[in-house]
Image (tube, rainbow over all chains, first blue to last red; front, side, top):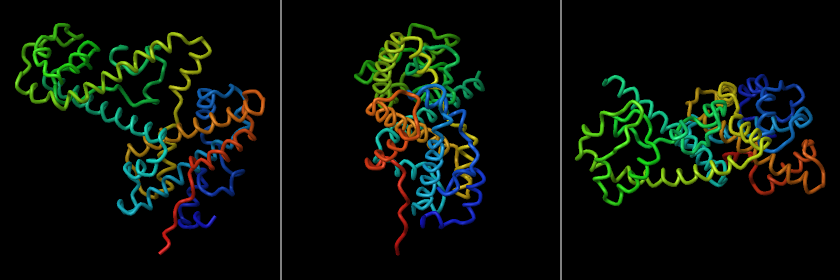
Amino acid sequence: MADEEENPTFEEENEEIGGGAEGGQSKRKRVFSKELRCMMYGFGDDQNLYTESVDIEDLVIELITKMTRKAKSIGGSHGRVQVKDIIFLIRKEPRKFARVKDLLTMNDDLKHARKAFDEANYGS
Amino acid sequence: MDKARPWLPDLGPDLGVSREAPGMSLGPESSDPGRILPRDTAQEAREASDEEGGESARQDCPQPRAGEETDSSSRPPVAKRRKVDTEGKRGRQREVNEEEAQEMRTLVAAMSQEQLNRYQVFRSSAFPKATIKRLIQAVAGTPVSQNVVIAMSGMAKVFVGEVVEEALDMCEKWGEKPPLQPKHLREAVRRLRKKGQMPSSKHKILF
């Protein structure tokens, strides 16, 4: 995979955590088994047989690493991974875009609410 | 408590909202520090009508919310009037959310026990933020902000949903039963790749 060779130092850290190159799948520790099992049940799968379909965890890690790399390579932010870059990258995928927008909006609202709450507390 | 989160059906304390969605859908409360608790639905409807010019509606807010009785007379009318425009848009948005919330409540009330279980797990399941943050920082090489982690976790969950849904479609199409097998997943991934919904290889800078 030519596009994986760009940051060799980061590859090592990736393998220890379990992300990155598609070649080393058998060596990776399963970082997401509990959560993935719950999530797949929530999405409609059956309860028990996750251990056979562990491919999903590799897909998730691939998604995260590829998104991070793409976001990093966007020229405007000088190698930093920023939210606006992520949002730009998923602009064409309606579900992801809508979900990320909702999450960030709610987080923002919550922060405002907390700030108002604290101000009120200080006032009284 | 259910009025505080109109978008969340009232299913009890263990719905795990804290991980699934970072909070309540409140409006810009910073404009009114006297109001500690989020507005209830009646007040939201009044906010929405404010946009149409009913300023007096704000003056006579009759129901005292829990613990906040003092603000109905001490509110400065002029400041409020000036803020009506921006809050009007949010008020409309919240009205729409309130309708959606009502729909969700109806839907949830009609669910069977097994559906309820599944829905509960669906809402509360999430990727651990610490692990995601570690992974992103390992790839990026620089520390990332909290919002990036929130965005990435949410995106990963949607992605899992897309794959699982497609795989369930494949499973059903081939006439087989739910516990998903790797072949379903692989076929689902192949289809999503064709639709362009899989993470593709990054574009190399050519020049």
